[in-house]
Length: 485
Image 1 (tube, helix red, strand yellow):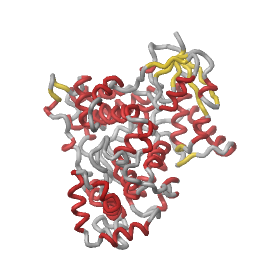
Image 2 (cartoon, one colour):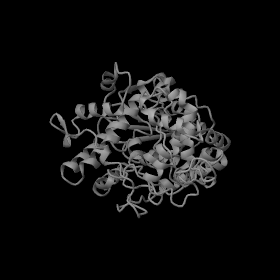
Image 3 (tube, rainbow, N blue to C red):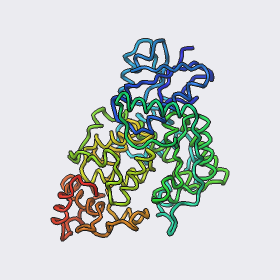
Image 4 (cartoon, rainbow, N blue to C red):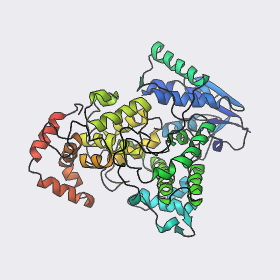
């Protein structure tokens, strides 16, 4: 049996043909020379590789490049980026197998997508539910409804600073983590390899055992409370009831099929409400698979899509995660979360970070790259459709029906950030004008010609046309420019 070459996002047993199959791991320093990754992301990846190297018949090769590290005939599962796939195709004695680590097969997605003018996650999700028999009662969806989003949009409970749920289990670092941290220090100080963000204790699994323990804990203690407040934010509770399993799944430590089965089994056993199980499964079976397939289904130039003509540069304070330069409480706290953890849940990503970037007209490809480098669960395939299509609406609606733009009223309703903030979410002009409220109307004004044909934007654009202070607002936001709000 040929040795199986595993990339750093293919570390679980489902990437092997049988237990005990010989494994090759290649640790490439060139990856970290090319781009400035978050320090905790670099630590997570290297720690995961080196922990995996201590399991079974594993050969770990430390090399400058992947090509330098592969010196024998191997098989490899289809990589998760075009660059890696093209590299594998050029390498002699490397046999590439179909992709693993996702639920729906590429040929099934292609058959579903063929002939559709627009690709919508909700349609794909229903197809996947039926195709794989997930949360189905015969031919009907469990509970009689496909989507329980309406039950899962509650704001945070009033008067609390954190949800009453158990925190994810603390991870204990070991000698491998300590050696990785010391090596990253040497790279940084002796070789000039740069990192973003703060170092810190490891927060996410790097071994199969740690990942399974986190999955079991989430299903038992957090999933029951996940649904209602999955879109809510609390300044004092970055985790809420989210699973925080995406780094482990994207390292390949967990098979998405086992994650989905664990959530459905808990619902079937009466331990988890359907709304929570369905909302979580939609993220894994729906969104995760959907953006993976779109990465390959859309043409390579999709990453450069810019239908709204956004050409602004990401300002230094945002690029360097300088949360202390920001006075807007929501943006400061979320940017600090990226700086200190390399992770925030999906609503701060979309409605605080992405929303602000879109309002300010930053170049979408640069925004996607920023998310890729600074999030511990970020990969090119993850961020391409999520940021280019969904967050920045740079594809003009090929995968979403409208821009995810929102003003301060949304943030005020769905978080506790506005209390104590120097800005007023109700104000759009003046010293107390909320940068999100003002930014929302400025975004609409700048893109009015491009959005006029979108029927879901009719009402917001009608509101824009009624603004008596439109000119003052636009001038104000133009003067704000790239300054930290």
